[in-house]
Length: 223
Image 1: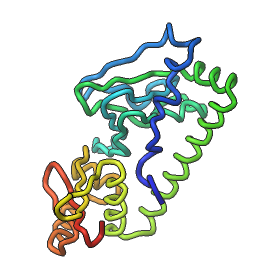
Image 2 (image 1 turned 45 degrees about the vertical axis):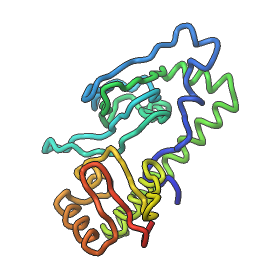
Image 3 (image 1 turned 30 degrees about the vertical axis):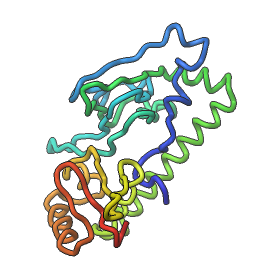
Image 4 (image 1 turned 90 degrees about the vertical axis):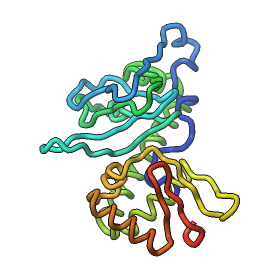
């Protein structure tokens, strides 16, 4: 399945931003964040959704032990906080800027509902987006529950290729320059950082992947 670990790779900013609608353009503003700034915290009131104009945003939560768990890192054109559309009153996750120049388009839920009510095509696209997101999350949960760690990792790597990968002209390998730490990847595929480190080194010894801090390379045999 394409885009298993990521939400739609279409630029939702171009589709949904109220700045694109004449009646909202004059009163619409953008918010800017530096690296590590929070857009919202767990338990904050959920009265807006957010579109990323530029930069990257980390979505996650903290366990009772205070450990950070990352659900996703979203990039330009993607949407987050969307559960507010469906009636969520309090956030159950945090959103934090990853870049030093992240620009966010905040959309009040009432404004979005007005746009949906007045534009059937727009409304259908919103519901299609939400349905696709829930299907992907369901598929991700199925993989975590029923597939082994190696399979989950390799599936994740193939999905990263679609988002961040490019071909090496000399070898044909897939080179993935991504924003994730090993801790982030471990959280996303449902394993511990130590287990992931062991697995990645095993795959490196088997000439399936190669990696450093900046990139992961999928060797030609699986790419």
